[in-house]
Length: 268
Image 1: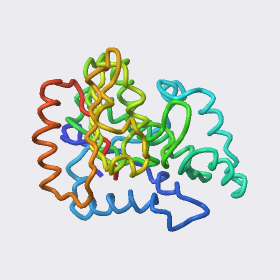
Image 2: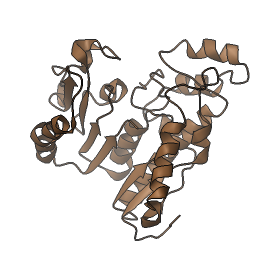
Image 3: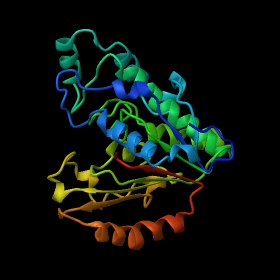
């Protein structure tokens, strides 16, 4: 793996993230395979040889607290990971969540890697970056984990960009199949972050089945007009449909906003 300082694209990951898996359902669709398949393909194409490797290190608690409540952080750190039945009961307090003995450390690495990648970009060590991290984050809110997400990696990274690097306009583009309600909640009343999400909606029938995932939820206060939902009510959309959305809706809004930094929730 290259550590060339002049590489254009940085990337980060850690093997520990592959150990985060559901202990009571080994065939769970949110599995290590989602990450390992990307790693395998990048290696097959020798893409990493042209990139800058940015080491993932565990995030410190203060950075997690940029968004999440201290009570949530403490609760997750004490999850009963050594007893599967107790752990299942713990996870059932939330919606669609699992943990194992590696999850908490993997989640801290996921955030830490994202922040290290941000540092590398903002200090011109690389031009852009690809955070190959899991557990995912965009469903997690300040006070609860949700939808297989523990710490909201992209929210914490955006907040760090604003606080550490004085970013004034951060664009978050989220094109995961699901709406990232946790990310929306974080920036709903600020114009320092423009959140754009295109997601499967089916008139509210598709998970997370929230009214606030619809197009008419546009932000409030200083954030009014800076939350853009593009709900997809039809299924079976093709590449041409997504190209239309990007060229005719997303890109014009993004160019008008003129962001200092763009963060993408890719949903892999």
